[in-house]
Length: 89
Image (cartoon, rainbow, N blue to C red; front, side, top):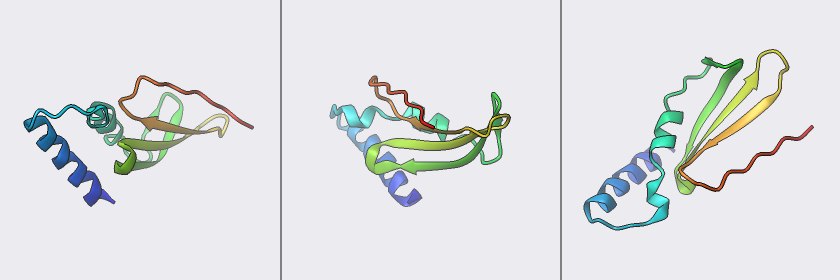
C-alpha cells in the first residue's frame, strides 16, 4: 500500500514539473500532516489507533478513540474545500 502512495507522490512531483493542473493533485499538505501521527499518540483527549494512506482517493484516514467516553472518530485528511460532519450512535 505504501508503494502506491510513494508512486502517487512521484506522479505529483512529475505533474508539478510539467505544470499540469489537476484538482486531485493538490492533496499534499493535509495528507503529510496526518501521516505524521503515531499509533498511541494522544491528541486533545483522543488516542490515535490507526493511520492509513489511501492514495487512490488522495487522502489519509486516521482512526481515533476518545479516552473519557470511548467515542470512535475517523478523521479523513484531504485537501478539499467540501467539508462534511456526521455522528451516529
